[in-house]
Amino acid sequence: MITAADFVEAARAHGFKSWAGVPCSFLKPFINYVIQDDGLRYYSCANEGDAVALSAGVALSGGLAVSMMQNSGLGNAVSPLTSLTWTFRLPQLLIVTWRAQPGLHDEPQHQLMGPITPKMLEAMEIPWEVFPETQDAIEPALKRALHHMATTGRPYCLLMQKGTVEAYSLKGSGAPAARGLGQCRSQDGTAITTRTEALRRIQQLTLPGRHVVLASTGYTGRELYALQDRENQLYMVGSMGCISAIGLGLALARPDLTVTAIDGDGSALMRMSLFATLGTYGPANLVHVVLDNGRHDSTGGQATVSASVSFARIAAACGYPLALESADPAVLDEIYGAKVSGGPRFVRLKTLPGAPQDLPRPSITPEEVKARLMAHIGVANGGLWQ
Image 1 (cartoon, rainbow, N blue to C red):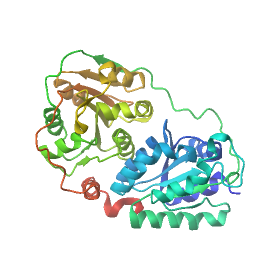
Image 2: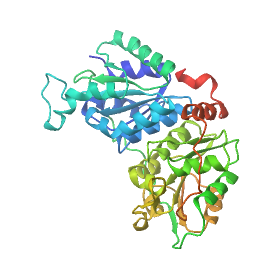
Image 3: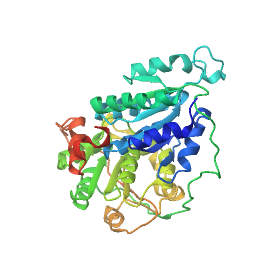
């Protein structure tokens, strides 16, 4: 058995300072230790996939991050692990608890996941080993993980067995400070502008330099690319709903940048739990945009349920200091011109459905997009993980 300090301090020495996840009783010592250390950050996520995407944003900054979860929550992380971290080669260290490990009795809900956890990791091409159980095994395990991350750009998993880490008490609740209800303005109206025109205006407001623009999967990223391909832009493929979590991780790691995360209504609806995480931890250099045309455009124009949703009211209720929504494209200028502190800015702009004909797909690969963006923001030699 090891102590939380044994592992966390060894990881810190290699540059791991960001920890995100969903609690499990096996993970309690780590979470309690990290929460109480001012030099480390723990992000309590509502969903394991959100934690993986947040850590991917940290990796995009060149940093190192740990994502923690129970193996039963591994299912929630499959999409970002297979179509985000694998595709873009954005590594992180995974600590997954091995509930219902073969030969050990556990709760009924873990009985299937326990035996298949290694097979799931292997199917996702994530190498794994048993979490170190002695102090002298920690450094070799971390070096194997870091070597894999540096050579492949992909995650590495430590599978934690019961009773591996000594208890560590939490003094106080460890809860992040509540930000309270933000300022909200929601204006009804019928869409008068296209997504293309909205993206054109966002490009005009985010000239390369201190701005980074991350676009959600589907037509949003493809239209942004078609308008003008830029080094400060990332075009998401897959991992629907994860773009704002990536933006959060990058914005937290790089306060010198203004990070814009552009969602569609479908992607924002898919992971609405992220609004709470963004409202709690999001910094003032993060701008969250939802371009809402009420459709899943890239899959045939099927309707979403966004007409029944006030994204701005949800954002304000979750702690965004400023949340606006309108059908008037001038709201984009307003949100970028606003001065806020203590949290991110949010805007939802209603847009007309449809996309340009013969819309091209990016000719640059996801790996090239990532590498180009990292070079643009000054990440040298791949950052800490290379």
